[in-house]
Image (cartoon, rainbow, N blue to C red; front, side, top):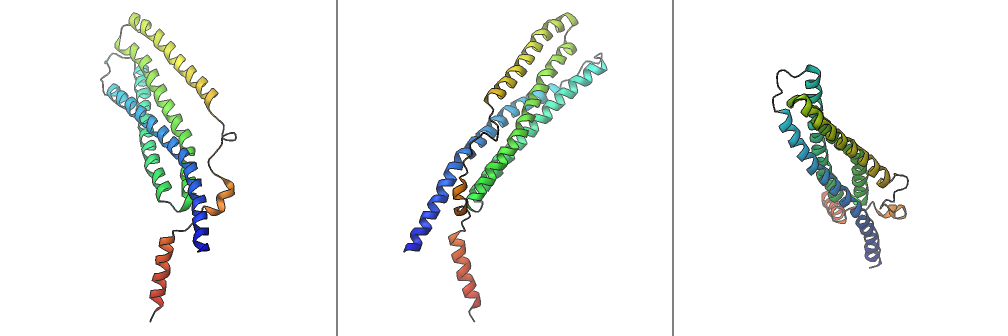
Length: 211
């Protein structure tokens, strides 16, 4: 009976550790879902923009800059969509079906590592899309109209870039100062085997040894 109580206590400790890290897992998956939805929207806008024919009298350098920025915006946003989808699907699968609490820690750590690069792609995709619109004004409008449109668009692009840098600088938390949900004191109790699988393996091995 004492063995059962001891196993229940160890299982309770492991369950508490998983519940703490579950908060981090849900936070990362919500971030990926948000980026995926926004990136899908911008990818649709960029695809519609790149399929529109450019006037034949457009200067070559202007046309190349416009098409390159639009293609980069489309590519970066599609990469964000795919990365977010894969991270959410396989990250939650690893945490749910992995062996012990270590699988949850591994899922959270890898989601944290992938989030920084994915967020950078997300910002580059939006920046490319906004700058492409500045070049677009010089392609589809006359010079005086293009100047009139380019000035406020450029101001808004610079303002967006400034606010993004400011917000990220003020709100981002360095990894060395961030509190994580992993409790180091409980690490010895997190590598628990599946009791059902162990019982089946034990009974199966005994049956196999019988003459």
